[in-house]
Length: 236
Image (cartoon, rainbow, N blue to C red):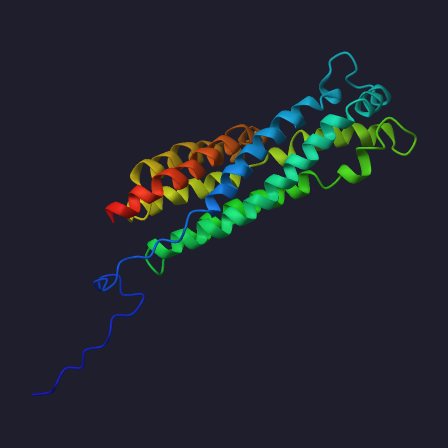
């Protein structure tokens, strides 16, 4: 009778019993997500205050729009700072989220990478959305900028940094993680509903509206990891 060789379970063998409890990484990274969400809300408000191109009284008048922008430098500075602070913090949150999900989802799961990618690309959109600020913030209303270009800049910051649609994909990934028991069920449900709505808005022609739901969802998810992960670990 041939002796059977017992091979140790591999990382991809999800049916193998866990000999050691899952090690949950600290959740300090979620503070970065909370800060990024709050910065996103500040970005949304300050960007909305740069409204020269949307003023019905001067719509179509590039010269008047450029002059009005020259009076809105504080709002544009607030937009730039909040967008860039949010982008920096999002990168930290994305890395922490990836590590958190990788520690608790099956080894061959794509969910950690999907969640990471959605947050990272949203951070890139904030950098791109604020990328023209150097050229226009202090030049609007002067001869340094063609009025038509200044008007286009106002459209740019009113749409591009609001494209948070792919952040919704990260939320949907949390729902998938919840099905594996990797995150609390309520957090997965929030990710599905809020993230799904943000993703659908991002896919639609009104994609800038994802900037209204994305920062709120990010704040809720970050608080969920900060407040709920400790209790969730205790039950695991």
